[in-house]
Length: 165
Image 1 (tube, helix red, strand yellow):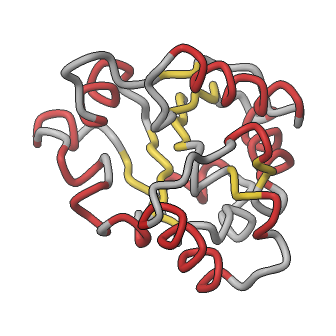
Image 2: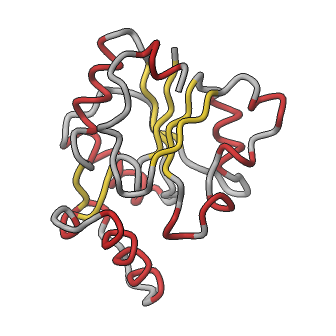
Image 3: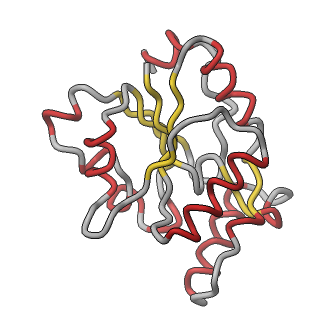
């Protein structure tokens, strides 16, 4: 089983946002985006117990791969740095190539399960991956949507339970 997990907003949150409620985290992201301030992704931290959750799935045989919103080599390296720094399970880190949408990446990688957040801070479903995947691929990919900046702690540790969500 291959599980693709979105990184920003799903696995990682800003280090300054850890003590904030999820709603406050969303507002903080919206403020940064509105001000067009650069985001220092290297200062991000795992949301909750994301590392432990992915290791639980990996121990059961899941291949974990990652999808980032970052597109430049430096930005992708920043996310790779975070995955290594915090000890996430090894796995491919995928990103959009020039002219690609997230759906193109998901269709190319073809995970069994796609875990992504609801993109509340940037427009919701319009910014998500799964809703834009073509029907013939959607039939092969299970979608698991979590609240942005809310973490994945509440998802089941058991892969069989995750498959039927």
